[in-house]
Length: 258
Image 1 (tube, rainbow, N blue to C red):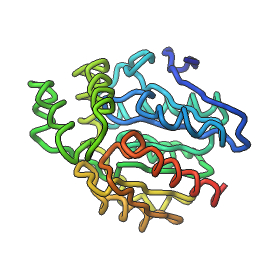
Image 2 (spheres, helix red, strand yellow; image 1 turned 180 degrees about the vertical axis):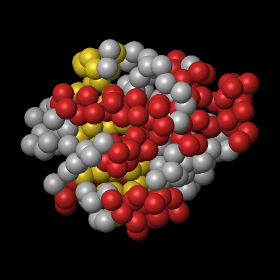
Image 3 (tube, one colour; image 1 turned 135 degrees about the vertical axis):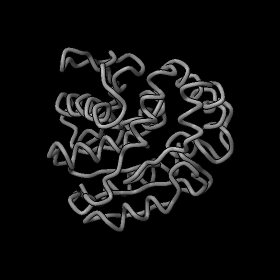
Image 4 (cartoon, rainbow, N blue to C red; image 1 turned 60 degrees about the vertical axis):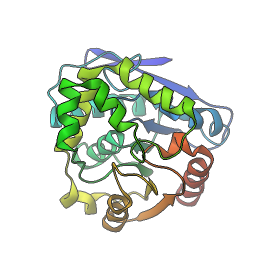
């Protein structure tokens, strides 16, 4: 893992580069995740362009930050992404779920000017089920099981992917995972989407119950230059569950806009 120090903390990231001609693409994970959720992109796309995937503060190998759930947490995570983007010269951002919210925050509130964006399993508003917010505080095991039940994080995945996702959440821990979801719950930029001018791809799994297809159609319809793609046979973590379809979709999009 590489690291970059900023705001008195260290953010870890992995970079895979096997001689691709394209500019670096930075991937941002979602709630309770780490860079490992982008393993199929790190492994399979690095011959086309350098692939960068970070651990947000308090996740994986990155130092934590003191921040209240909500705007303060999203802003702190945005600092992590911006620091890695500047360190690696990445101008194309891919964000999943909370990661998508962070990417949008960077563009809308930090004047970050990307070459392109891919918003994956996310939305302009990310309300979280009240019961899930309660379980994240009082019964973490139940929250993890709920998220890994049918058509939430996955539709019909290989067992290893379920174990990877669960292990990630338990390693990140209840406090930080809960902070992530509570921060999602406050996120709402529906009235600002027309300020996003970079080419933007909204990718969703057809079975995603956490951020359903209508969220992504709304994104694609309300940014200046939006495209919508629905991935068959997947739910929220399309990049992990159906990596070939996801990688092909992303690559075609980037070839068309960069």
